[in-house]
Each structure stands twice: as C-alpha cells, then as structure tokens.
Image (cartoon, rainbow, N blue to C red; front, top):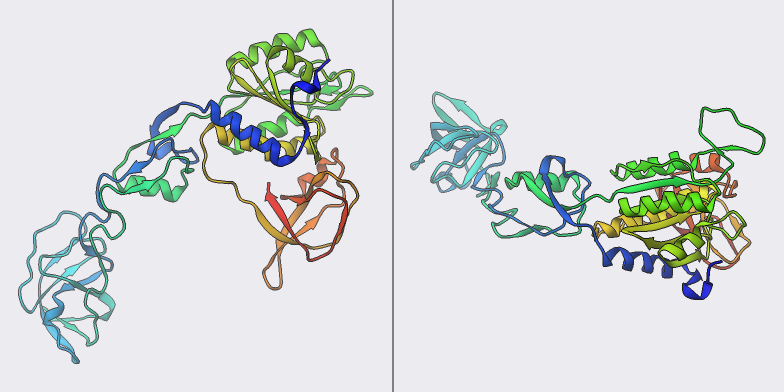
Length: 408
C-alpha cells in the first residue's frame, strides 16, 4: 500500500506544474554541440555572441546605381558619368569621383565615396551616362554596416528554441555549431492485461493498445526519438523487473495506465518502494490519477489509461517536464478564444475540454467545444485541435465567453 502522507495528493494544476518544473530544473540534461544546420527545434544551452557585424560592410539594398548625393541638383534631374560596376561578391575597390556613379547589385559593397543608391527602375541610361531624377533622398537604399548586429552583441539567449529564423541568424554570423541541451531519452510503456497490439485479433474483454502509438507520436512531434517497450502486464514482479531496467537507462519513463487506486494499479506502490513520488492525483479532468516521481536516473510520469487522459496529461505535464529538462525558457503558446456554443460544467475540477478552433466574421478566434467529453472518446479528440481550459468550480459558460485554449 502507498502512504499518502508521504507525498502531495489531489493537488491543484498549478501546484503540480510547479513541482514538475522544480524537479526538471534540479537535474537538467547536459549540453552538447551540434551543427547549426541540424539544430532546428533544439534548446540553446548558452548565450550566442556575434563574432562579426551584420551587415559586415555598407552595401546596396537594391539593384541600381551607387552615387554621391552631394553631386545631385536640388530640384532637377542630374546626369552622372557611369564609371564602373560593382556586383555582389569581391570588393573591386572602386572609388567614385565628383559627378560619377557605378552600376551596383543588391548586397554589393558600396564603392568608396558613394552614399546613396538609385534603384534601376528609376534610372535612364544612355551613352555612358545615368540620369538621376530629382528628389532622391540622401542615404536611400543603403544597408549600413552593423545596423542589425554589432560584433559582441548577444544575439540569442540560453533557453530559446532554435526556430528557422534563429538558425538563419546564427548562420549569417558564420557560426557553424551551436551549444544545445541534449535531447532526453524516453521509454514509453502501456500497461494492462486487456491490451492487444493493433493488427491482432481481439478476444472478448480485450482492447487495442492505442495509448502507446499516440504517445510515441506526441513525442516524435517534439523532435524526440522515444523507445516503445512491450506492454506491462498486471503483475507486480514483472513490473518491478522491467521498470527497474528502464529507470536506469532512460532520462524519462512514461507509462499509460495502472496509476489509479484499483486492485491492478501497481505503479504507485512500485514507485514509492523503488524511488520517490513527488505527487499523485491532480484536481483536473481528464487525468486526475496522474503520478509523478523519480527512480534511478529517470523522472517517471505515470499517465492515466484512458486515451483522452493520455492526450491531455502529456500535453500539459509531459511537455513541461521535457522542456524543463532541456532548459527551455520560452513558454508554449496559450491562447484565448470565444466559445462558439454554451457549455454547462457540472463538476468542481479544472477541466480540459476538447474543441476545434476557427475564425469567421470579425476574425476573432473562436473554439467549438466537442460534446463527446468522456475520457475514452478518442474520436472526439481526433477531430479537435485544442484543449479548452475550464476553471475550477461548476458553472455555466455562455456562448461568446473568453476561455483559455491550448493548441494540440
């Protein structure tokens, strides 16, 4: 039997998340260096300092003609001598004298003396001369050295997720490797004698094992490479042997099922006997029997067995744990939308209702709650793209009311 006095139980969502964050931060994963070209989606483990300026030199923002603005007439067109050309690439060292200009392409370094660029479409070229219309502003179409980044600037911060734009920034500064948190290794288990693998025939009382495939897909969507283990039987000795190996080999062990208070729910007792329970049961629906602790080298997250509970609890707690282990400092998106239909909430627990986001009319984000709200109703979840957060306490929600939503 577990000893409820030894750990928090039936706690609020905020309390549970705070514990997950604390545990993850206490023992984060080690950093590693990876090629910049392969670092997308990773979490930076250290600040990135610019080794060079960006742009590295004054250059043209357009195809056209580089010139000296002082040569232009105030209110009339000006004819300039076409003295050469500078294309993007090697700086040819052109020097413009009075009354001269040079053909130039986008990104090419400015010739010495040039301070303005006339775009090609506005120029008239004839007999080696370029006519510049009146009204060209000084400094037009110029990118100045270091106007984006100066050498020594901190351009990326530890804890940021490397998006395509951030990868591009690092590459533009000549950085070919980046320090990132190691990706956690994850073992995935489903438990229960009633589970049968998809593709095999069902016997009376059996169900297909959907949780493991669903959870593996959620993990792969985060860029991880989880390992699926065979189904855990409802046998304490077998559970002890298999989980004992897993917690010594993986950073995170995720289980589905076996965490309630039934005769066959052995995982809470095993975790208390062989590790530590940080909390058991959260005041939420679905997913109240959620179990979190650690054993061996692994953090252990025991998800309830109903498929929608797996979807919700991993979205809320699994992502938080994995993000924390990698030192992610940026919160995942949490939006607000208007309910497209009224909803009566009949229980006290915080609820995560399935829903579908859409926009129409005034373009305000709306969410349609799915009436099939049972934690076994996976079809409803398959046609949803968000979890609607309904606060603690029973009450009626009106159509048009603002609610928080978590994108799936």
